[in-house]
Image 1 (cartoon, helix red, strand yellow):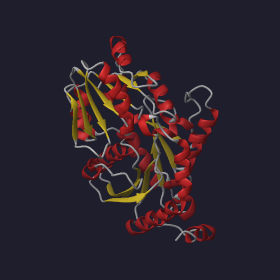
Image 2 (tube, one colour):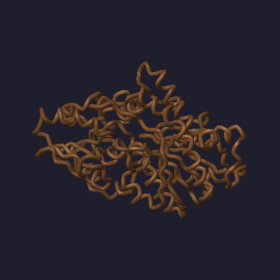
Image 3 (cartoon, rainbow, N blue to C red):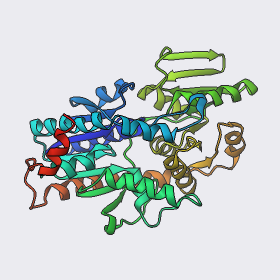
Image 4 (cartoon, rainbow, N blue to C red):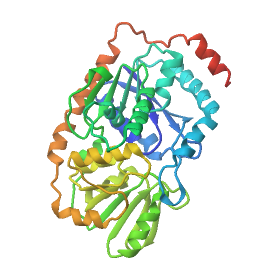
Amino acid sequence: MKILFLVQGEGRGHMTQAISLSQILRSAGHQVVGALVGKATNRVIPSFFAEQIKAPVYEFIAPAIAYNPGGKGMNVGHTVYSLFRNAGQYIKELRTIHDKVNEIQPDLIISFYETYSGLYNLIFRPQIPMLCIAHQYLLMHPKFVFPEKSIFNRFLINLNSRAASWLAHKRLALSFREMEGNSENKIAVVPPLLRRELRSLQTSAGDFLLVYMTHHSLSKQIIEWHQAHPEVALHCFWDNPNVSDEFVFDNTLTFHRINSEKYLNKLASCKALVTTAGFESVCEAMYLGKPVMMVPVPNHFEQQCNAIDGVISGAGIKSETFDLSKILEYLPNHKSQSQTFRNWYQRGDALFLSEVSSAVKRPELSRKTGVMPFFAQRILNSFL
């Protein structure tokens, strides 16, 4: 079976999920024939993705989150403004996706929360089935626990999730723990997608804290805490393009450019992980039995939800700031959920292959793209 990926290039999680699923699919005899990756104009797709996906990678411009300077989190206003300001460019990129789908003619498209996926289905009406995979789809589950007084934010994030998966065959919701599905929203709850390299790692209790941040502007808080506690060794991973691959701040603080192999080795040997509440990083830590302090990016509702769900699942604690003293205080009380998590994770291969098989067996679908509706063609042409 020929399978094409659509991958959101914001952050590390969706890309590592795509790598993991590609390994599962190839082991079952399927082909991953390409990966279309959406990214902001000023972002660089990490080299590890092209190296490990083992398929042609095609980039296109996509919306991205804008951050405030000085580590003050997500700038909602600028994010929305940028979306509308560049709407013409973004719509043009739909043609890039469509042309590549026509060229490759896959049997199945799998989207990793790529923003364009639902809009592509709506405008071009391809007769190729699509599966949409993300932890965000779990937030559409009626039993998901949200932050208090979050009705509006809950509406917005689920609206975005619905838009990213319009007309998809099914939504596969990645979860820290087992939950039953929800047929009303076409949700199947599945285990996390983690890279197979985790399975061979040997863990040890190191003497340093590991920090992972989604944006280098958040490093300001780390440096401030470090200067007050220089005796605690820290290794931090960031995406700062203006420094070398390894930036030694001083004897006990080192910043590393995001590197898959180096990060996993550090995770296996650290004392604990401090991370900006990204789903993938928390899952990897749970698998390896490492306590986690989750620090949601300010004004980032999705990460607030991830942190609450992580605490419920036994990953560790939640904090609003990078006050690393909290994780040091928590460590003696941590109860590892590693074995429970691994039991859930090990069911993943069979569940994903079953969903792939179910999607392509839909008798009403052919394997060619459909005819774009007239009104959609007019809209698209107005931007070309």
